[in-house]
Amino acid sequence: MDSAIHATQAVVTLDVALPGIIWGWMITLNMWAKSVGTGVILVGAFLLYRHKKDEMPNLRWLMPLISFIFLNIFLLSTLTDLHQPYRMINIFLHPHWTSAITVGAWMASLFTALVTVLMVIGFFDAHPDVRRNCALAKTARANSGLYEKIFPFVVFLAIPVTLYTAIIMAESSARELWQAPAEVMQMMWAALLAGSAALILISGSWSKEARRDLALVLAIATFFSFLMYMGEYFFSFKSSEAEATLAYVHAGGEYNVEFWFGMVLGFIVPFFLAVSNMKSDNKTLLRFAAILALIGLYMAKDVWLKIPQMLPLS
Amino acid sequence: MKLGFLVDLNLCMGCKGCEVACKVENEVPLSSWRLRVKYIDIGTFPDTKRSFTPLRCNHCESAPCERICPVSALHYLENGIVNVDSARCIGCAGCMMACPYGAIYMDPETNTADKCTYCAHRIESGMMPACVVICPVQANIFGDVEDDTSNISQYIMAHQGSVQVRKPEKHTEPKHYYVGGGRQTLDPLAQQRIEGYSLFNNITHLEHVGDPNHGVLDRFLAPFTSHEIHDNSSMMDWAEKGGEDTHEEGGH
Image 1 (tube, one colour):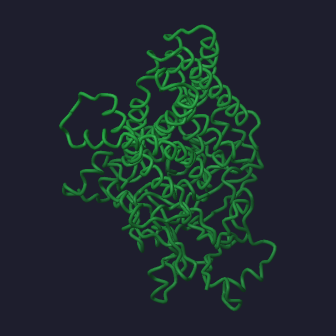
Image 2 (image 1 turned 180 degrees about the horizontal axis):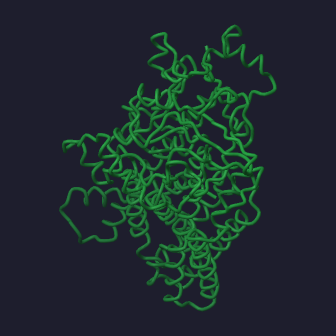
Image 3 (image 1 turned 180 degrees about the vertical axis):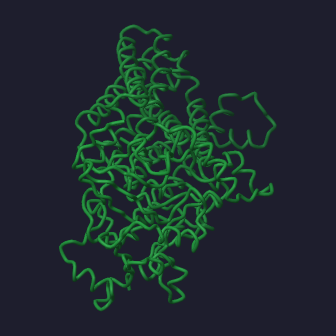
């Protein structure tokens, strides 16, 4: 116990118990899964723009499938984190449009619906022998052209869907660390990182050029993600609250360990592996880089989500 | 009409009458508080003094909790009160993330957000908030800040220069004022929370948000099962368990 409390400082000698971490791992999972779900669409669109479809034979159906799976993880974690999960319907029945939670929920729902359409059409087109007599399969195959019509809109929608969490952070005025404008860019880099990492895992049969582009996107995303975190870590705007929040990382302890594991595993190691892979096509190393990037991204997001919640607000 | 609160910290003697009256009036469950009085010791022995700071919702004119609430469960009343509709609340805790004053809690009985409403139900009936009525030294002053003749407006005029709000840099325009406060009493970052210095209580952080006896799956099953009514004893069992181990999270 420190016996020499500075005379100019005050000590709380009686207070109620404060809430600890309110938004925990489920919200980390929410943000991480959304980054994958939107990122595969953004990076997939980039690949489709740069390469012929024949070079990436399974992209057309696997891209929306991965997006669909991770968007559902995102939606499920959102729902389970609610203390009144069945009242989620109120967001649609009684929407409050100044809330980024509301706007995001509407956009994410529309996005998921469109990705589902892409997934169904893409899957039945890629597997012509599956469920030949099924009405859904017949409809999907008959409307194959719809995929290309919807896809540009889905790519456009992926951008606000991935960014809206930054607006929720900005509206969370009690947590000053989240108020940084860099939060928007962090969300975008996270989507590109997660999207390229997820697509790398299914790129075994693709052309070398396509894989090299994925490695390039992963390298750029890890590089800039790392720079942004370092910028906030060392040169934050230094309001007293932001500084007090960062002290939970600066001062050592579990969050310091998790943060640096996230930086090294998620950004530094994958960056060098991805850069080296641009010259020599090593699928195993690139997959290893992708897995590390996904793990590290989760850890970095987890720390950034939790530490601002540990400050006493009153 | 814009209702506001003013607390004269020179008068407050930390009796916690307001805290108890609020609990009783609003049936606030154990482990939750709409209004609390914080004790802060300043200085080094023997030159020390103790100050008491009642803390409640600031009913901001530009309330971040109202803005972030996705379903308008937090909404303004015509008299400026930021009210809660717990029947609409989805329990996302966005308001708890947005409130810079930590004034909102997750009610462990209803699993919805709740907070001080300036006793809106009493105001509607022409009564004063319970904490105002109970205060033995009239440290709580309540009224219409837009009415120049109201008690609170007169008090603000009489104490110009020493009237403060918490965290003015947040631009929330609080309608809750303090007289006689200082940085050490109003800024939580100017206070230390040191294990072992707390009177009566070793728990610095709650281990749960909302109902401690209902996990994620229970929230989904709740409508289909008989919801166990939590009385004080169930909460106290938890409190005793929580009190045994000192939580390391939080504090500087």
